Image (cartoon, rainbow, N blue to C red; front, side, top):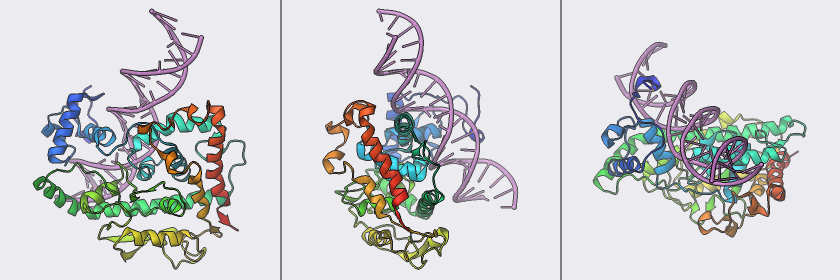
Length: 362
DNA sequence: AAGTACTTCAACCGCAGCCAC
DNA sequence: AGTGGCTGCGGTTGAAGTACT
């Protein structure tokens, strides 16, 4: 090889390719003992002939104890569909909303299965519209764009929280060292300023708001990870305290068509629990024209989105593959081969697209 | 049984962005 | 402001597994 990449800090003789059990054990043992700290320094300390990047990837995508492996549930499929329709190929953002799944796993699942199924149905997996349909109206495009903007704003807020929590994070890691168990860092439910959460919350579906309360966690969610690393006590259950930090939420004084999203996302002060946060978000979701922070010239009925998750949405349907209630990745699960599942996918697509089309009240 | 095509997914690559200096 | 270290992200690859002929 002899190749030096990434600015030259990754040396050439490092091992590549699949990880062995022994390597996994070394990495796990080291992180359990010390936390990962600097990924660059980790391989030498852990006795691994790998680059830090490879170690990070292995940990993030495979070894972390809070990763759910195995087949995706139908609820997860639907969530991915909705999120992809909204966010596009922003896998890390999507992973933020799919508990215990990594961005890599979701990306693979999309590329190898969901995208193909949509394509075979004549649905453009990029636009989520039927290929023979007229290319979307500008309003629909605006809706998607604005929702993506909203999510972007939220992610920016997340990033800021992460930055601001780093100081505390390092201190807590020290505490972990003293008071084991060390940072196996199971991300607990972190409150999430999340429009999708609102959709779910306003429906009867148990999706993102599981029995534990608002449990939006992702192995790759920097917010979740950081928040939990930082706060430790920021538990789910909807009532857990969130970071003692500024909270971003929607401007409530914008008025219809008046306020750009960027100006709407602002620090409004400190909020002491996610229940309050959710309450505010739900109020926002009640599409009061005056409250809704987007600047297009029609009302945007979020309630339309809540319907997306309602098919097959009872808890029984959401049993994961561990109890083998169904095999959601098997095309046969929905009653035969792909053609037989057309209804399922058609319904899903209809919900995704119709909620975009019909969700505004003219 | 053997060869080929297809599928899956762990892992890699390179870029972008953040941060410290 | 510029630079380098480092991490995170999305696209891509390729080995292994599976299905098909």
